[in-house]
Length: 283
Image (cartoon, rainbow, N blue to C red):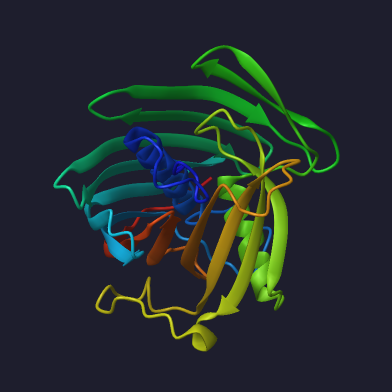
């Protein structure tokens, strides 16, 4: 979900506001996977999950009065990659009696070494449809490149060390397990045309935040973890406000039982309702 960006005005077009949602959803998908073998402390779990969407906080303007819908995700591991699929159906109710609805679909493939990435993203609303498709390569020491096929053929340079969203999770867990309270890196997802972004994360162990995770979901969710507040900024941008923000509960197995998406005027809460483990292949 790449919301019309967190710092955007509530006067933005409704379609732009809901397109912001896509980037945040994809960020959430990225927070559910990682590259195995790089951090012994992280026993990352391939899984399928269903989340509900609800209104978190609303500002005094009162423009937005309700959020509903669902998010379905699957995170699978193959012998050479992680594959994630995400479907989002989000409705935002406005004070004047209107409803903003957007259906969002994303599929991503990332090699286990985090160097190769493919993506397909589609957003549909009553008034428009947006499509993004392409591939990318990254390297810890050299510049990489993203190649778009849709919406038009174009190339985007990626700074050395750029992480895709799957690798971002592994790196965040690695940083969290060392006791780091702040982490910063460059990420790319391909869900719009903005290119790579700078991600800044603030990390707090769950026991110190008071964050509550829904009970009754089983041992996959009954694990230690962290609350992570992640802000995404344009590369080379001079403004203090991020493009968008998420606050996620990230467990040490890569599962994200709760995430709050921060929009201008309100927040939307994504809450885990059902989860099941998927098999890991014998390679």
